[in-house]
Length: 464
Image (cartoon, rainbow, N blue to C red; front, side, top):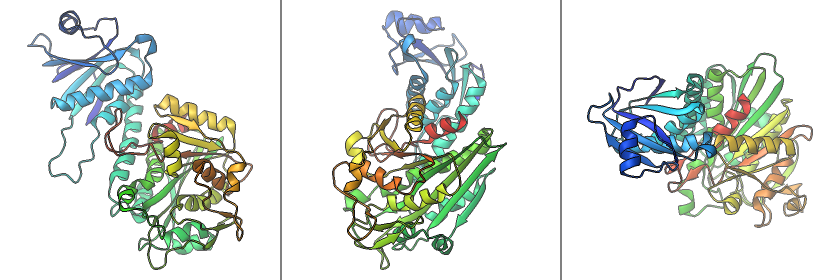
C-alpha cells in the first residue's frame, strides 16, 4: 500500500470525517448521511454512499470522529484503522482521505492505516485484499512521512513475530540485524558469549540444535547527550525445556521473541528518523528453549555474567535468565538508561489481561515517562509494585537466588529477579508484554496475531 500526501480526489473513494453534532465538508454526505439516515458520527462509525458522478470520486466514505472536544491522536488511529477495514471490505483499490482536523495527527492517521490494512497472508494461497494507494489531505505532510516510518516499523515487527519458528531463528534475527543501515552491529557466537561469562543465557540455549546469537546494534548521531540501551527478549521458540509446556500452550510460542522483534523494528527505523545527540544500543540474547539431550535441568546452578549464581527452579522461567546476562552486558556499556521489553510472565497476563503491559523499574521518573509515552502512543502500560518482599520467594539454600518463587505476585518477583543484574547507578525499566504482544482473537483494531507491542512507545520515547 502506497501512502502519500495529495489532494487528488479522483480516486475510487473519498474518505471524509465527521464529528458528532457537526456537518461534513461535503454537502452530498450531509444530505444523505445526516439528514436522511441520521448518521451521528460516533467514533469509528462509517457511512458509505455512491456519488453518481457528482464529484470525481465514485463513492464517499464518512468516518465518525466522535466528539470534537474529546478527539486526540489515539482516536485518530482508531478511526482511520476502521475506515481502512471498511475500504478493504468493499474491495476498494484507491482512496483519498480529506480530513478536517487542522493539520494535526498525521502520524497517528498513517499508523492507523497500517494497522487497518495489516494481514499476515504470506503462507496463504488466496491473499487478502489490500489497497494499492491512499492519499491524505488536511494533515501535516511531515507527520505523514513520520507515520510511514512508524507504520513500517510496526509492520516489520508484526511480520517477524507471526513467522513460524522455523523461519525466525536466532540466526535469522542476527542476519536481519546485520542488514540494517546506519548501525554498528556485532553478532557474538556461542564461544564468544561463553568467554564473556554468560552462563545463564547459554544454559537456556543448550538444548536446541539452533545456535544462540547475541546481537548488539548501536546507533549514534552527533555528540550523545543521552545513552540508552533497549533489550528485547529473544526466545525464538519456548517449549518450556525440561519442564515442558502442554501442547496447547506451546502452539503460539513463536511469539516469545516479541520483545526482540520490537527492538529490531525500532533499531531498523533509526537510520531513517535520525534522532540527534543520542546513542541507542539494541541488545538481544537470541536462542531457543528446547528439551534436547544437553538441555539444562531443574536443580542446575548457573552463573550469570556478573558472577551471581542462580538455582534453576523451573526451566520454563527461561526468559529472565537470558535477560539477566543481557542486562549485565548493557550495564557495562555506561549507558544512562536501560529499557527491557519481554513476554516475560503469565502472571502479568493474569493481572492485566490482554489490555495492558506491566511496567517496573528502579527509577520512578523513568517509569512515569515510559507510561506517559505509551499513553500518547496508543498503548496502555500499568506500573506493578517492586516491594522487597517479592524477592523472598526467590531465596535459595544453595545459590544466590532461584529463577522462580511463589505463584503469587509472579510478575513482580520476575522484576525483582531482573533488578539483581542491573547496575545500581543506571536507571532501568522493565516492560512485560506477555498479554499484549500476541492476540489469540481480534481485539479492537488489531487482528489475530502479533500487535507490534512496544514499537510505537519506544520510537516515540527515543525521538522525544
